[in-house]
Image (cartoon, rainbow, N blue to C red):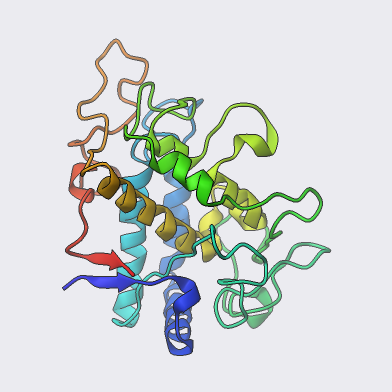
Length: 288
């Protein structure tokens, strides 16, 4: 039977406590740091050579779907009642709304060094030391809304702009494409600064701190954010009559993207699964 992923704003006190405790236990066991390492390993940009899987490529959505499932499986090995909640950033849009409460993810970082000092993932609680990072910082940092140069979270109209696009992705299948649902949701735009960050990318910028780097997994909000992104893929499929992942076949040897992306029926590293196999997970979970 499929289990249910709930909106973080609707979780009961017990559900929040069990989710937090399971996450802390996965961290204590050393498993959590492996998730950070995996994301760091598979974060490749357009300018790098070789295969791109996690970002700036069609597999952005199936890659993170499988990644979330791995974390969820680890949580459920600790407590079978736990599922990943999602953060609806089109509705809960302030630093005081869900999920930034002391009983869930804690709040904003302090002004001096952006260190998170509230909630179960605060460094001073002793349970959330960052050991795998792009810097030597050991504590979780946030700058919700970016105090020095404020930005707003994406709204419903931003999501609608992505959801109405009928093609899953288009050539050249990277961060430069203006069409295609995948990049409109992932959020690589043209120009410079805030205007170029849309949807998924803009949320990372709004949270700031730890969420700005390839080690963004160190902030537990990463999972709630990506669960909401995953929900949008499900909504897009329903709106467009089960439209499929693209490309269906790999670019040929004369294409500049040859060997740089994963087509529908190719293996999606680091797993033995294809994007096509991840298009329908209704037998595993659903969203409330």
